[in-house]
Image 1 (cartoon, rainbow, N blue to C red):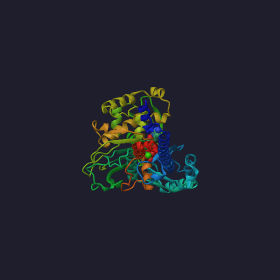
Image 2 (cartoon, protein in one colour):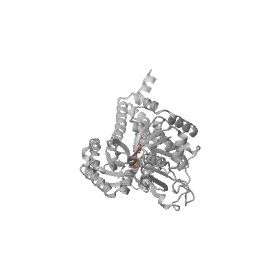
Image 3 (tube, protein in one colour):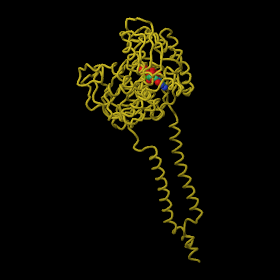
Image 4 (cartoon, rainbow, N blue to C red):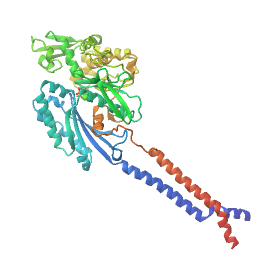
Length: 496
Ligand SMILES: Nc1ccn([C@@H]2O[C@H](COP(=O)(O)OP(=O)(O)OP(=O)(O)O)[C@@H](O)[C@H]2O)c(=O)n1
Ligand SMILES: [Ca+2]
């Protein structure tokens, strides 16, 4: 009994002082870890913002981006916070009343004010980039395009943000920034991974951008864009085909079918039973087709549907020119294109159309995809109208658009049934829309450094874990030391 009591007395864990030390130690560790976590989280919650307006040919979209304030010059942290679709058509449609182009943007800009903390408004950069609709308007009527830009500038300056300009993007910029967006969001740039190509299909133009080992910019230098990003060099091949967005491509196809000025056509790209009267003036009212306008015999023609995928493919092939190529290889219309390489992300109308048609799965063999599209095109217009509740103008065009997408990819860009699966139809990557706007803002705010930034050797989680483990270890060592010294303390009173 006495030996047992002695052992109990010698065991420091039964002493109140040891218990107190242990409790204090545990409290200290908990406090240390809590302070570390809270301290870091408070800093991360402060955001900076940027606004980009995408003034496309068919409509305008406003995007708000946000990033942690302390990561200004760091990697991969910019994300889309908000998207607002401007009501009505694109700014290039307001030539008769340019001030309305400016007014059309007001409601989205008001939304932007609500979505960004007020004190951040003056330091939030605001950009507007216009694409193919305004490119065409400039070609057609350059003073009208100036008026539209003046009107939108006036509206943008009336908001409390830091206005950075409204300008026309070059086709190369549109393609290159779309590529930057996709690869930035996929975290490919910081790690120097093999990049993903970008395919963007708009209403008035379409872009293809990718890195090819066989392209260094010496052949057809106009198609080269060189970057140094995070310490890695890239020479990107990019081309923008004006008039080959899906709305202008439809005009090219209609122009091809109405060359002789008929009073009616049976268009294989529209469903059987489709019947619409169209004005020649409206179809040919675009610089993409205006020079092909036939000597009019009548003001209108009847647009009938034929619902035949194979014949539709033939019509669409005829809007591409494959005859001349002064380079080693071409896509179409005499434009150089190096061999396709790697994975591709296809966004904007590529996604809208293929998603509507339920054809976004590219692991399905191309033959099956074509068969499904062929069946869709052959479905009578009355049945299509019954099955879908969307505006008829859009509904009528999906057979054409789907066929156009496959023909552009296979005949135009030279994808094959084997490489078709390297394409992924995408709308968003990690909650941010794929498109040129994010890449444009990252570039103009210098948010992608040429050299890799110095990064802390540990990630945040590892840092907290290491500190926690070390704190516990120190505490245990402290207790062990205390324990090893205890017998001495314990025997002292006995000596006295
Ligand atoms: N949900 C949507 C949104 C758009 N569209 C159509 O897709 C095409 C392209 O849209 P978008 O990529 O927004 O083109 P824009 O940016 O307006 O045109 P561009 O890039 O050529 O200036 C247009 O015909 C548009 O009507 C669609 O079918 N479904
Ligand atoms: Ca676009």
